[in-house]
Length: 430
Image (tube, rainbow, N blue to C red):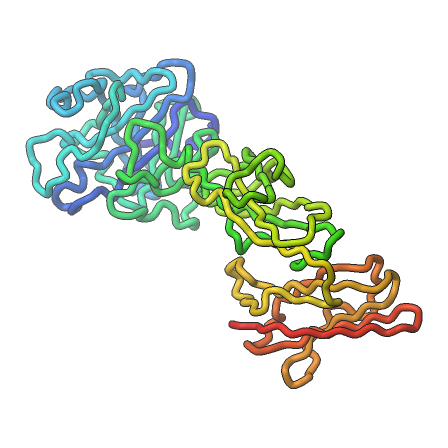
């Protein structure tokens, strides 16, 4: 009888034994080969040997968790036929050594019934401990919505879960895809929907070895997400550069360096005399981005090819770590410039706003920058009679919900009873 209740299951958050991977949607038909290829991977993150014979596994099919719910006990794997394909795995034991993996397999994994194909499909590493349950399935067969609990008879001694059993509202777990396992991202963090991700290994799973998600790191740069203000630099002025670092990986990180260089010889390789800035990484959350800023002081007149390169520890996709962007430095510019010529405010991170750069004859006057539509109707004031403390600046317009069309950017500057006016156009496209 299963008399362990939820109030005592989750009292321990730092368990020596951790569920690290679950395969519930195996390749093939569930009515043939499906059940026999299910597995649960556990890891001993302590410095002590753990005897898994003291543990039980429960799949929460019975949500009430009362005396009628029966868990599976864990047993050693004694079928030596598994050694034909995997001669160096550990069997006939339930002792899980420190910092080692064990796989809970269906008893039929190495059975004689090979219907449905996909016979012993996994690449199991040497020395992994193979164990099983007390019947011919893991619990009553895993479904894609089953949470799991592995626990000792003394509940507070060691428990570990998969699938956030206490939270029925988060929709987790669910189907990760045919032949794809769920992998824990960070073994030191608790069981939560944000700490699991479908395996990204080409095989679809990593039984008995480190999860593909543990080392998943992919920082990236995109030329469209590098912003230089002003867009056209006047000789003798500084260029303010914003670089958006994109984190496509599963872990937050600041373990990278951003190098900005002026590729003077156009060989697409940084030289020591070309480096503009060597910037330490800013924290970038998983599937998020962060802006890193630098100043290129007084670049010389002419066309500059700026290189932006990420040096990231453990990055698994380095081909997106280097991009280039052209910067123009001219001898003179007008009072008002807008880039890009066409902007598309659709929140895709590319040309989502119009960048408006202006220069003024002297500071401390009243500045007004207004947007008009093609019929001359005022759309909005980006600033109105604002005191300009410097002689140059940058404003942005995100379109303000306006429809596709051409818009006029109008600047008026009043200083010492002198009025300066300038205008230019931009196109909003949706």
